[in-house]
Amino acid sequence: DVTIHAIRGNHDDPKYFKGGYDKPRLKFLEDHKVYNICDREIYTIGGACSTDIEWRKLWNDEAEVYGSEKRVWWEGESVEHKYSDLPLKVDIIISHEAPLSFDPVASRSDNIPSYQYTNIIEDRKYLDYVYKEVRADYWYYGHYHTSYSGSLGHLLYKCLGIMKFSMAPEKINHNPQGEIENVK
Image (cartoon, rainbow, N blue to C red; front, side, top):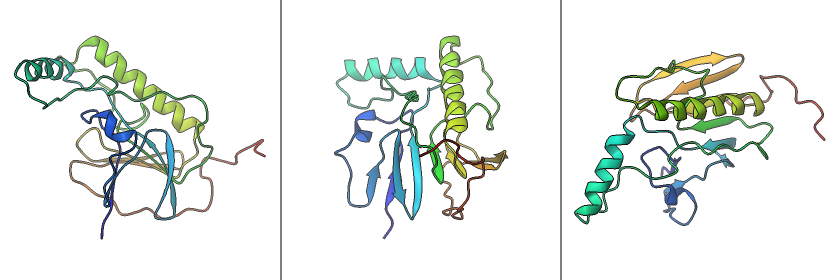
């Protein structure tokens, strides 16, 4: 009796996260929407930039030549940057990529093309913008395939490693990032 709610990662076909592909116990959540799941308001932001983009594009080219449908990269894999109509307050933000202010510290290895590293930094900077604009108690992400946890101000963040799950966090009935001013 478990329903899995999935957000878009960088290796996922974006079409599945635009509606119409849900199953009874598998829900594909759209980017930049607020969902009420288990009595918590959850804001979702999928996507990330692949560090191995050149290999993935080459694989797609070869798959196409041999008639395979086994794609490993899609246009639009990165985070969609949305600056208007963001929610003011949610309980949880779930993203695939991490804000630049969260662990891990951004670094470029030799196998990441410089243009792609720039894209990664831009996505992470955008998620910092979301952190500053949307008040939340918790933020979960998973792009880094390992576990991290920490806090920034009063917000608690956690990167879930591969096949790691986390119990639903405590429901907090206050706003840890301060009062929302000038809201009608």
